Image (cartoon, rainbow, N blue to C red; front, side, top):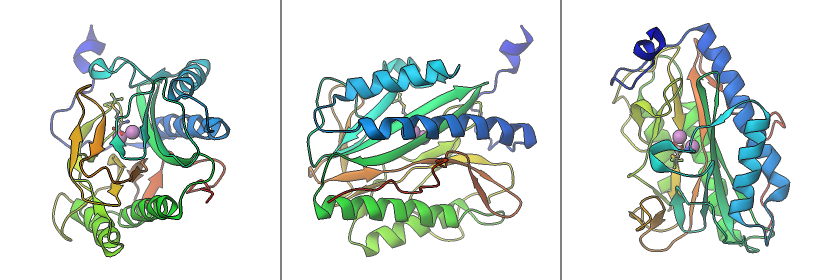
Length: 271
Ligand code: MF3
Ligand code: CO
Ligand code: CO
């Protein structure tokens, strides 16, 4: 019974984690990144997103972990697959990938209660130069957000680092979805905005765990959610890209729990 009462919950406070939290998140983050690495050679023209979902689920189960999204708020899949103008939460299905698509795959695994949440962009065969450019801007936006993470900085500094760069490239930052605290709770406090003003928001402290997961559009920032209740798309049908890491604030900066062991920050996209 104790465990039931002690189960971690989202209570609005930003949790500060110790060494065992870092250890747990390293293992969860590593497995989530491994899952995306595993999928890479399968993201090809003709492959359905349902097949990628099956591969991811099997991989996670084979590694004695749990797919966090399966059953989460009624979601029935392991990954989200967001193609082209889909901003996030695309539902895997019988839609086959086509040459030239860009697709975000977002996976969250649970290892010993810890959540590793990460997503990447994949190019399906050769993609257009503008699609590749959007993907590169999105990774650079995430990189700039990560570079702003250190004790004493504020959440607004992260958002500002992303927004100022992305808007200077004449792209837009989606405002309707944000990053989140992460740990034993999947979506914990705080909400991590990908836009903002320097020096505003809560101060970052060692032991805070959260995601940064900017969604960047080639056109306007406006999104709508389709009738399925999940799929978010750009209102102007412009291309959208996203990438996500789960991170911890350290004494000196940031630890990226979901970094790929291949050492690649941004997987290659062919044009
Ligand atoms: N992984 C997503 C995130 O980055 C959440 C997906 S929720 C789901 O927060 F239910 F759609 F899977
Ligand atoms: Co997330
Ligand atoms: Co995610």
